[in-house]
Image 1: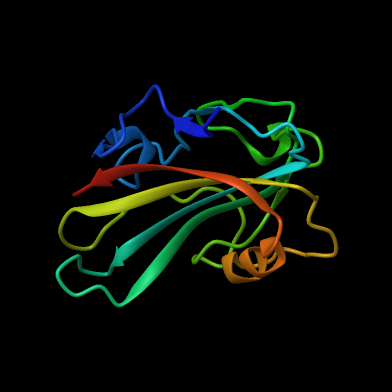
Image 2: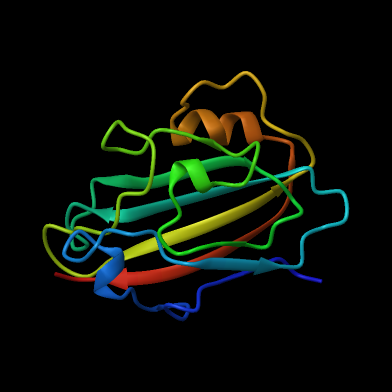
Length: 156
């Protein structure tokens, strides 16, 4: 079975509804997944935008959300999930606003792509304290069993 990441709020390659952006309630979208490998010990979710600041001349990948050590016995995250409601054991990394938590799409110009990336790992990531995306990705090296991507787009 292949790892699949979906959202009831938008289909792959389609527009992200305004309520999940800075122009709306800035709530995280609902996400669901299937097809975890049997020996999955934890999950990582990273949402980022490789089109920042301008899709015609991207200069950086802007990080919107970093979650790690999600337990493998869950199969979804509810819309607008708060830190206090995250599954037990789940930890948050820093986004590019230098804080934890979800920060929705807010592109300054053009239509941006938002990559929702889910990774199944054969371990839990220990010893990290509010890591950046790069630190989480470095810790994941050699432990990724499967990955899935859901891309949404948004333009103000």
